[in-house]
Length: 171
Ligand SMILES: [Cu+2]
Image 1 (cartoon, rainbow, N blue to C red):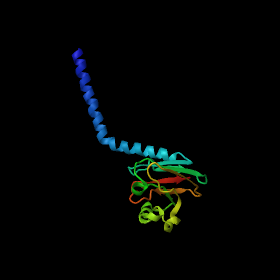
Image 2 (cartoon, helix red, strand yellow):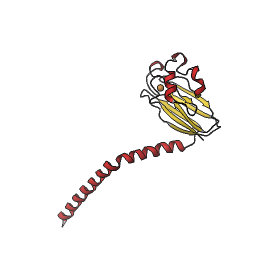
Image 3 (cartoon, rainbow, N blue to C red):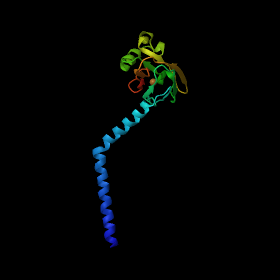
């Protein structure tokens, strides 16, 4: 009697194990995508007046989507969490007007080293920007937007905007 029970238990655990594998194979990707979407939409739905960004030697912002209220003062901080200096791994945050292209701005800023990669020639695309910082530094700006919309942001240090970009939604 005991033996039969054991065999049954073993068989059913194999059955459940293989069932679980199948689910992973068929639904693993969907599930991961869904979780990611849920996570980013949760972040984006929360309306904030403080944006705290960090960027390290991995060339990544800690967060890529924010929602802010129209007409209120927003405080944005940027902290460099890496080991590299501003010359080799500088970071900044440039917030662009709705409809502006992050890659157009990033490509246009590449040669503006004298201006810390925030060229005056493209100032008409910019809502606000931080200064360029290196390891151990932090910086803060305050800004306000007067219209609802999607405001792209990027780090304009050469080669960074492919990874270091995001969207601030104002509503
Ligand atoms: Cu950067």
